[in-house]
Length: 456
Image 1: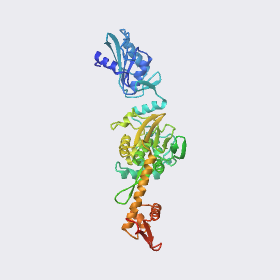
Image 2: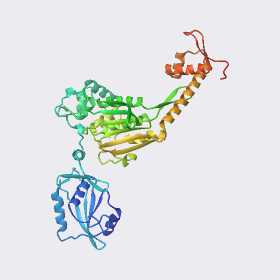
Image 3: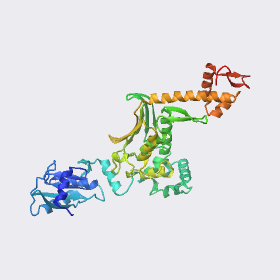
Image 4: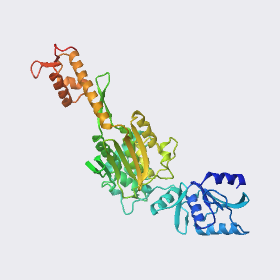
């Protein structure tokens, strides 16, 4: 370890952080910090330094460093063996103890596990300990066989649809035999279905719900639905439900055809939904919760960010994510439901470029992650204005079409303008009431004409 007093001076001025801790003396908390560093990205403890970064010095005898090293090794499991050395700073002895990120996690001290968050040590919960262990071994919970479950629980119809979608997508080639396909993708372990295969293909879906609510206020719900199905089916059902509650306006181009513009970009909404389904913690009993308000949509996914990922990372285009549910993510990737691992939030932000009034907010809250798409301006005002403008433009285009094609009938108008018959009837009624058109001829053979007394 190449360290000199200048290096220590720089560390003293840097302040405590995710990789740096100050301790006035060597004690139990020093070892806890080293364990937290080993379970995160590594770090350094400076002993003999006050909380404000002032070098106070520490008494170090001939065998002190060896004694401290022995305490660290004896108090940690697996044993942490840090680099340790004494440096004289401003005439005072400071001891620098550094540890690298441990390759096989988690490390504990006296049966307690810690990780480093910002400038503090946080004790890990049991679920976090398990998660950290699987990460270090590159294991995934969904790849484990479901105890006492058989392959008979899987739906052949769902498997066949999945195989067809994978082969159609072109990212992978699967045998038409469901069992061979499962084995090829490691959805079978020791002759038993994995948790991933049950979540994706079970005849009777596991009880992991998507709860969708339509709210007028935070405590006034006007509609709600609970979806319980295998994952591909649950996503499609949830999207249909969400779309049914999103306001939409109509725009018209030069081809007399209307375009729908939803209050939220549907690809971004779908991406947020799939992200919640693919990356949620399925060992957590909470539901995915989607709340639709007049001016925002929120998506809550059980389970905090995984593999050291931070909220700040998700606002960048360069974040590296680790996958909590590797087999589930693989299934959605192979069916072209996701483009590539870890790029979902990038695509959401790209979709929002065309919606300047929308803002994206991501936060860890409770035991999960909450994503919000919030309108900074009144969405109802904007949508209503868009609808009114769209209707007026549509009525005018209908009038011009009748002017250009005298005697045209309702079915022809509907097909030519791609307008549903009920909408067309309302617009025709409006034009008749305004005295702009008239129907001539018998009900079954006649058609619409421009009212001659009205200027074009």
